[in-house]
Image (cartoon, rainbow, N blue to C red; front, side, top):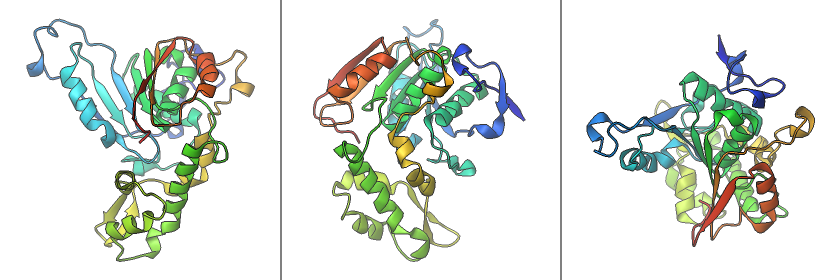
Length: 297
């Protein structure tokens, strides 16, 4: 079975019009929020449906992270929009199709396929952290697909543990999760895991966030991962980078000329002044704002 999606040679030249095998893209799980007709305000009545919004979570997250925000937006926006919160590959409810590849070109193709599959045209894509890099990759590789971007606390750059303390902290978290070895510890509870993680993750709110990726297998009574942790750990350097293959695949530099809004956490170090030239090169029509006191997570 095939879907209409061009990824070969130069996907920037079209919106979505050719074919690739369905098996090349993950059929992403999602939740849709939309303003029902009974909730239409007098101002909204008669207005045409505006471009939909797709929200992409970050590393170790899932679509539930943004469900409350999406639900509120669907009710409060004067211009009606459908809002989709999506699980990116190897996260959330995508356990039906785990993959070893976590490249941004592949994850961007997942989102493009998602749009094609659900007949979503010209979405505004919102992404946080890793999801923000995926959103940027979609816009750069499929610019005619996207009507706007909102990028939350991430830059289109490579992060390294040696030069970026924030990414070093992420790597320590992943290393700590890998060392837990849930399969070999029957009878262990989430409380036990929480105690183990305190050695590496001091912030209790961050530990609670990480623990959302662990579930109890009711058939065995043993804890299990809800994420493809092995693939994430194996591909962590790829996730830290931002390689879209532009040096070998495209004649012209990748660039998205649509409106792009970067939101930076004032207490975060993921977007810094040294990143601004790269941001401007990729996204010439961008603006940036900083939320004072806001961290990354």
